[in-house]
Length: 399
Ligand SMILES: [Zn+2]
Image 1 (cartoon, protein in one colour):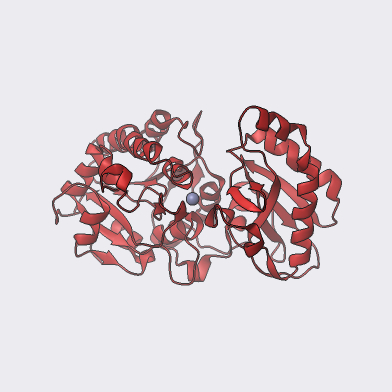
Image 2: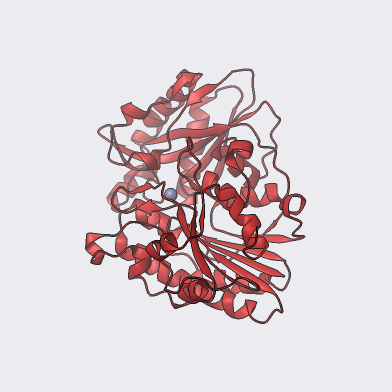
């Protein structure tokens, strides 16, 4: 049996005035996703359990069959796994975003999608100025960097992801709790170091959002997760993604990570290359997961045209070739599903159950109609404990 999972990150949404009352998925031309939906079945699964912030760390863990209440220790530890940063059980990891704050307002959680090279210059100059014992910065992709702490300081913190409060005062969301003074100090020093930095001057001159400071959040210790093979008996898996968070999950699940030239977390990504690689990897692996971040980033920018276009590209360049490839195997199944909604109206991740479509061997057609939030919700298939979906998918719709 060959399994393909395709995750258009944050693609689910609500109906939008700008799209004539349609959601971006409904507005997009998605013949291949519609084929999956009509040949197989649609449904919804709650991927963000109560008490958790909506985000890909929690939602994709759930989607893959791991209850976040048991396995989730924070977002940053997953990204540390991606970078294969060795962590002892007492070490802490924080996400260290480069953000744009103007007059105390969170303008951009991504500092205009700052380049890796620019991000590294800023972070390295911050590290040189700070010289705090036990703290070490690790570069990630674009604005997503990490801060590791190895020392005796204790943390019991409440932090807030910066993409969760766009256009709101940052003062409302400052780190609180034990150890928060150090975090505030690091953020304050970053403001000073970045204020007159030449990287930012160039960014301003060229019309890009400057990185005005770092924002620390998503902290935790290293998680202890059984591999996908141990948990579900699927022998081999491969992850294809442009973001470190999912590379990290792959490492923890015991999967290989396949890189694709030109793959990014934005709409400039190499959709076609990713689709071809996903199809090709099905020859080698029992399960291939292909994740595309672009619809999520477009939603955070409230850019509905780009969101629609990115969903169309995923359909044409990823789902299409993968479906064609799967049909060459005697037994196969495909699952198409956003991890969580990201709502254009609020520019935030939503909490509505995520619509999925699955098809393939022994998945019987139930509800007709193209793939959409509405049709998925209208089906009788509603998985409240979202981590049960993976079992359901692997068994072909039988629990
Ligand atoms: Zn997002």
